[in-house]
Image (tube, rainbow, N blue to C red; front, side, top):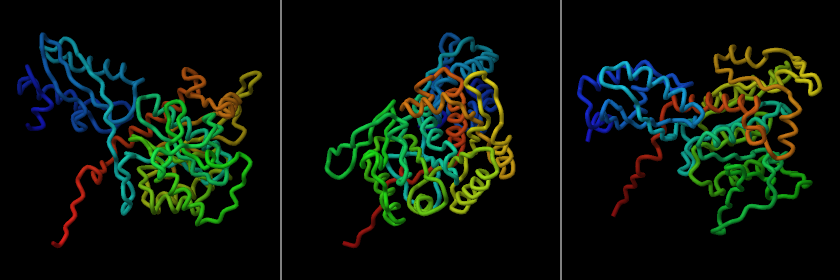
Length: 374
């Protein structure tokens, strides 16, 4: 069976196929650059009684965008004579995408997104957790790995207590919260236990946390990196297949200097930077609602323009975001219809759509061929 046979079924003439493809060539899924005809995300067409039915395969999680996309497709395709109505079945079809060279892909994780900052205290962990929750909320299977061995924050952010279990005595089951799979050194030690370790032990621990956790078929794993560009980041570049990175910064000059270093580090190790998030962009007074740029203005956006990478958005310094994180209920779950959850959701659309536009990673698709001398 050829590709066109899979795309077009009953009641679709050659002329109608051409007209449909012409329309799809002018439409992109939201936040994507590749048009629908090129992406071949619309499949299994049938036409009965002037109702055009097909499957729309979403290459990134975006349940909240289904309605507006249906409206766009209806407006375009019902202009074709003989099509009066559409019947669309939405299907999530996330693929593995290309990572840095010479690093072996993980069979149970399709895409790994590293979230770094260069500088501590910029709200990177809160951002990482809300990004993971936003991707999960939209339909993806998502995990989050806390790579900050010295100062793990994931247990607090997700309100998780207790230790991971093991079903086979070899690997740990990830902890579960709000539909996320989670792992952190914080689950394995007491809250007040300091990690007085040298670099080699830290990097070995990170690798173990990643590879000895029984992640269950993840579409995305978000790795919340510690600040800096040291041992952990080098291990990430050399041993862990990373699909892309997101940089979090505040608008002040001191943070931007370190954010530049983080960008240069990812660039040197061939990990594409998906964009910059400016956190604490403005302070919102909890009494009067007055908004003020106390850390400076548009530093993150200027940095993104300098390096010609996407500016993913700005998050305010708001007491509610901090309170929700401290209570173990980040904004996406505490107030899903609120303005902060909406901002995180828009960031998740941009990040995952960029990956959907990127080159595929086929290394786990083809079987490994071993030749032995008999």
